[in-house]
Length: 127
Image 1 (cartoon, rainbow, N blue to C red):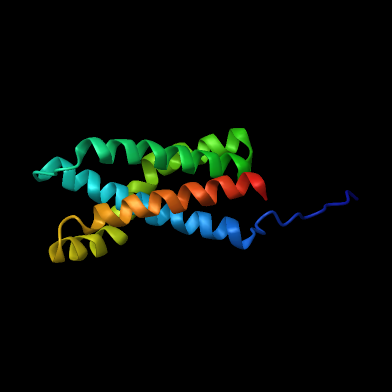
Image 2: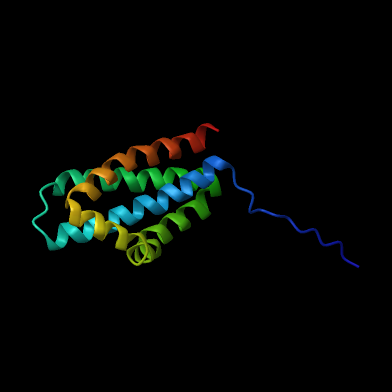
């Protein structure tokens, strides 16, 4: 009989779990502000574009350091395509309520969150 060994690969550190949660949070904000940018007179288009690039680089750094190059890039592509649609129907509803209080709050939260996400992505490499 063959000796079958089951390996549990779903053990993530607290830092990795925080990175996954912040990625979900950041992509949801990005998707909402992207929608806001297209459908309103959004005043910070260039700044948002720069922060978007920083966000995707941070997500790429973190995913590659957690899963390796091949799976990390694959998960980054999934985040860029599928995750934004999931976020639209989950946290996007929350950002819609927040934007009714002040329409630039999601942008401010996004800009702050990008730096936290970048720090967590870099910490993935260090630790």
